[in-house]
Image 1: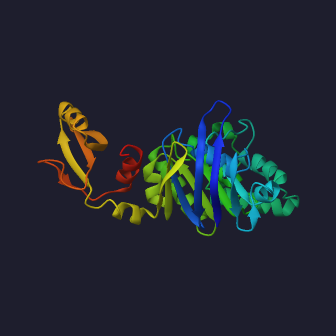
Image 2: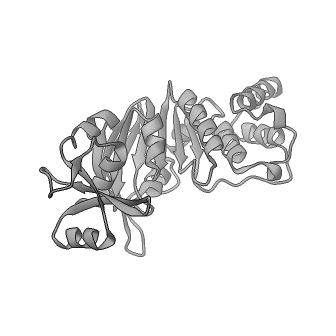
Image 3: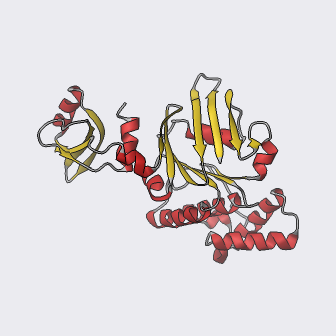
Length: 289
């Protein structure tokens, strides 16, 4: 269990990145949803001991994260949003080097660990290829391999599928699902589908504040009977917005604009009730309040 209590962080330029954030994150996949600039990366960096908060506490099982950083780092795997590799070194060589830095000093044990992680991430067949020749998805899977060194109890992945094609995204989803069975895995993303596909519990964060927590099923059920859909022209959408309707999302379909409106009753004639999905929940929190 990872427990975060009243965590706050304001940067020197005055940006309030985190405002009294409190979360209880159990074993399994946990989704942290929010738009760019919501505070997700600030929270991840603080949990990963890369920056100090102004106030609050973080507890990983029996470890005080802010007071005993070395103990946390021994139990932490981290794949940041910007993950760089040395382009002229092979995956096997770099993973072996990182394993040494992680404390795996026995050569035979280290070789077995590197082999197992490359196989788990489906990279063993390209282990002797320079990392500069890897695709974006392959580099992300290598990032997970290095994050798994030392059998960590807590893994943080920050925007891991941004820029991946659908096939690589599916491979990455399968890998995350596998590693999230017996440890705390925090998936920080603005891609609603990643959380919907993978996570047993989630939080929505915006402007440094936790807006909502729960399971995907519970948060979707809480919006039943409150989400309405209609195909409208651009002028009709503008008129509804001007009239005070809470338009939580809009998208183009066959040349028309489909809007979703949050309302306890049918907004007007022509609207049909829809079963809320996680995207409706997300946009209701980000755009609807």
